Amino acid sequence: MGLEDLAKALIDKYVLIYISVIVTAQLACWGRGFYKRNKIAKQRHSVDLPRDIIIDHSVKLADLRKESIWASSVLVVTIFLAPFAIIFVIWLCKGTESEGFAEIAGKNGDGLILAFIGVFIWILFSGTDVAKNFLGGLGFKTLMAFKSPFQVGDRVTLKGIAGKVTSISTFFVTLQTLNDELINIPTSGLWSEVLTSANAGERSSLCVIDFYLAPFVTQKELQDSEDTIWNAIQASPYLDVTNPMQIFFTQTDKSIQLTAKAYVASTYNEALFKSEVTKAFLNCTALNKIPLASMRNRTR
Amino acid sequence: MPLNAILTVGWKDYSTQEYSARKLHDTAEDESEKSTECLRNKIDDLYNEVEKLENELENDESKKSEYEDRKKEHKVKTKDYEDEKRDCYKTSLFQQLQQLQSVDKPIIIYATEQLFRRNINGFGSIKKFVASLILIVTKENGFGDVYCLMDVFSYAFLKGAKNIDFQLPERKDDDFPDEVAGLDLYRNCEKKWNKKDIPALEEFERTGKRLPQKFIITEKEYLRLRSILTRGSARDEQRSLATLLVSGPSTMKEISDDLGLNYSLGDRVLGVFVDNGIVRAWKNGKYVIFSDKLPAVIFFLREIMGLDYLRSLQEDIRKWV
Image (cartoon, rainbow over all chains, first blue to last red):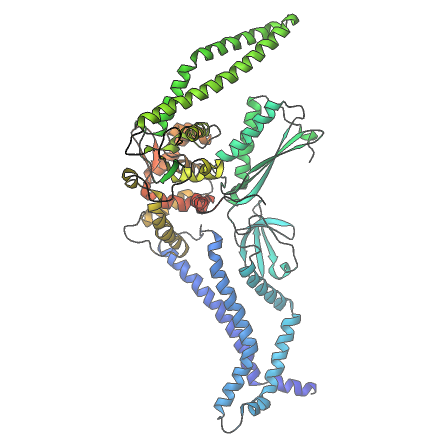
């Protein structure tokens, strides 16, 4: 088949219908999702609820899962089944007695087969950046819905950037850092990345807080410090009591390090939780004149 | 095991109730103080001696050995005093429980959660009370079933923080006296909260689906409370509500002390919840959350602060891996 024949086969009304079906199906998926989201937004607005939703994001995971299955299924079905459906329709239109299905396919199917192979290769090797990003992002979103390496609301580290996931779209994952910067990371680029989530879809996350005492503290001072940290953690309204807490001691040549590990109920309150416990510890050491290690002498 | 906890919902003023945990504990503490008064005075005298010697030591090194001896004696006597006080406490508690006991009905101790406050120094009373009860309430001592009524949220917190369920397990069956059955028990509310009230609030928040008629909270009240608690600067409001839920009825001073707020701030914060019909004030100056508003409070604290105390009742506490 020469190039001229190839072009002639591809410039065919049925190929056009095939491509149109794929594109229309994807637009319909997007439209369906948009309509649903819009409907919910309008309903919430009618009862004077603000735009942000305070519900835990894992509740939305079921919806995300359905949407991802739907979008991926539609793409697969339209690419693989649409050619056969089109030929079947042609066969029906031309009358089933005049020619068999195979003959119809043979006469009119060249272009469709070529278009199908072309689309398939294009998906496999992702000919353009836009296609690559679109397909990579769609694939990652589908994986996300089932494997949940992280989800909206999680505190994650992606490509070395730490922040809270504010949105996951087909093209970008948006992170909000502690300094309130919004970072957009291409979704398709996350396939081969190591993804670290501080809370992995849960509300709570582990906090590690270090305290440093001078190496010559007495036994009573050590015990008082430990008791204060323990009680301060338990007294904090931010603590998640369903997870265990521990205090570990480490001795260095320059200090005695106490490491407290406890879970904060809401990962977004980690800084407040640490601040409360640290404040209680510093109050205790000031009140009881317990010596702290100097900043210069702390080693980890 | 004769000692059990029964989880209640909502709070009543049991401060003058004969069978309240606070009354039993305070009486036992007073008795133990009175019984050990002589020993306490001796220890105070010893302490004064030690201080005096410490001052004299600066000018006269020869007093060092006397100072060390007195200091050692003070330490030993203090330990003896604490042991004796503990024994007197247990004895007094034992005698009180014996007086409460009758042939035909078990002992019911009300409002056990009132012995606990969620602050750095707030666990001592309840730990002492429950530890003493375990030693006293035995079949050998002639005791039958003893029920400690405890608020569900305090219990859930103490289960996670202090493993109180090991010492005071929750009574799961229905075999308890009529006067207990008539109270607001958590087991009676659990299904309604988890299957009806909280899901309705979730649907309202998520999709705007209208709340049912005659619901625990109107939409207007919900939106008002939401606007207060979701504001980023409303940290003290969130913490105060969480404190009221776990520590139970609290005066303004108690909340201010627990959270390190200044008094006027505590006044303002509680005033907001009173104005919005979430909290009411008792005549004795304590503030308490309305029982029927509890599902809404649970929902907001869960979604905003991640505090899910009811889940800790349903699951075993996670272990370290």
